[in-house]
Image: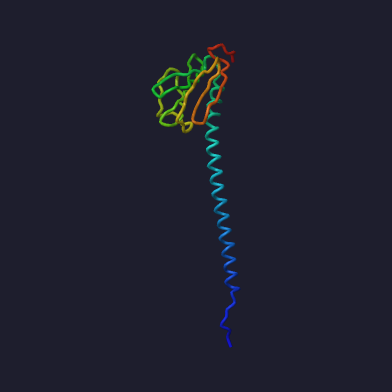
Length: 160
């Protein structure tokens, strides 16, 4: 004679396996979200630090007698880093804000800005350059402010 009662052991086994599977998927989902947020924060940090580092390194690399200047243009302030070439010609790296980006172009000193051919450095809504005292430049972007001591300027800094 067959028993009409069935053992619930099979259903318990399936329920426990389903519970472990759901826990595993939740753990994978939580790990993936944590990883994505970590990578986004890292990329934001690199972008922020990269912009400030690039500007300060460019200024320090072009720190020669009267090699660093700030000019006003139709695009706002322009950081002009002049490089004296052989034969009396001089060229300038010009850093300025254009259409929500910080851009840089390289051209003969005194030539007009040409933002269409400029290299994009990064996204930037704010770009100001002030001289709080003497040879000190304060360059402010969305990434924050960076202070650069221009040693060789027209304001009495040392020579190269």
